[in-house]
Length: 242
Image (cartoon, rainbow, N blue to C red; front, top):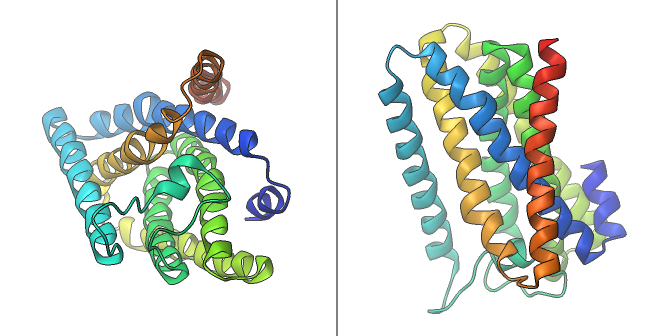
């Protein structure tokens, strides 16, 4: 949240775009190099893991559609436009500041459970998962900060509300740690749902925003930063393994 505050107070659009590209690589790298291989290794049936990932993507899609449907009041509401374009001059398009806080609190709570499940499986997996989540939280929270500002919040109040919302991660992590210790058989399914969540965030929420920048230079930069995000996860794996 300190990073979010610093970026939000000194924001430059190309910084956020670079963060989004890097976050996509970190998310996908964590999923396909760490989380899914670990879930498959712990599960007696790899098909069950794949099916859980598919179910998770459908669940996250449905939840997001419900949130958009409840808070859009016209036919062409682009509810997530501030997240996709990362444009600080954008308007709310029907998403109130309250909605941002409620949605983020729920999302942060789930992130806490995901982190707990990863650490209970393996410390190395927990570290990689946590860093992947942090990588996408910074640009996402900067976008939320902008939405709150344009919903009438002062900069200080917007930062306070985002900070309060972020503590849901701690609550989810503690509850997950205490409850999952007695339910180790649930770990493969939870890791698969974690993979689904990170895939959905990368593919549905972050990547569409990159397509709005169509110049060749922008595309090359995006690809390089995505590769850098994946490479960071791979490098961490090799260092931790050694």
